[in-house]
Image: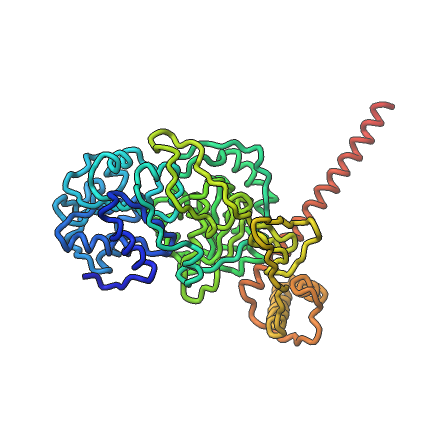
Length: 522
């Protein structure tokens, strides 16, 4: 008997599975990040084990093996009945009722003939040998996936079990709300596409890295986070290792502690990075496609800097920031890739049936797409907030576009207008910022690098749009949010000076060449 109680939507999922158990041998449970798929697996396993039946839980990544076993025991499943199918694991015992298997290990071995139920975690990941097992055996199979969009799923799973949606989980408070911004929209119109085993057809990474590694674009990523990231614990998704290293270096140069994590980062080092992140010592993990499963840390900001046309990649990556946590009001999402303009918001990508346009046996071709009636979100021309489809006035800053500017008429439904207004800062908030700016001024004086009262006033006006009138000058210890804002302005000023210096130098060289040229003609 398990020692946990299922949540409302988990009860719905279990009831739907029971209702379809006799009619369908293979079923796929669609459940987004934060739904509790491991708990669902534990409830199913408990029911089978109580009747002496043998269950195999198939994990796609080795990091999930111990994590799943630990959760199973915490939930009340018997630890003495757990066996590991992974390399030469000392706890391997084919006679035990609960087999936790590595997918990579299993597909290299003969599939055991004593399994009554196979639970496939992250079922959207394509492995030809696994698909053959699902197709050619007569055992029950339950797939688990938060992104059941792969074009071959309908060929192997008979029934889609969909107890809820991401949007509903957000409304229930089981997932975090989010705010979406699109500060950049790089031109990737000439980038070719490549076949990827996991995500289907997606952009060529070498070409993407060249575009996304542009110094101006990377500078925008740093500047935007310093100004608007609110010093939140952040995960940044990059194109490749070179791109990730560049972004990390620039964050570090700006005084922000960022670390890189890639597929080549050893398991122990990954855990150390995650520990430092959870303790606050590391503010940003810059990664290349590794924090998409088995990562449950409290993430409050996502920087997405890897253009994609894959709905699976998009939803999986953004989902890292949608887990709830104590004191978490929302997740900030900064899309520097332009992907939101193509794919829309993550909680609006919903399939009502499993796609079956491919058999999954050959290299995956063009991904299955369905033309949806909904329009994609639009970017506010003023603050870059991503407005929902059909919304005219920006709900974040209140900006009202001119006729024909940034307006997409959706004839399928009535245009809805929101009375969004620009945020009104209280006197206490303005005073706090001014006191912190004066504290920074005192710090600069103590280090022999003084700044003027005028600089302080202009910095305040840049933030609030008004001068700091009727505010007292009592210093207040500076917070990371204000410090980052000041740092972003300094970086922007330094880059402007550097650019102006380069321009002046180029003009001087041009002038010299002109004189030299006239001399040669003479």
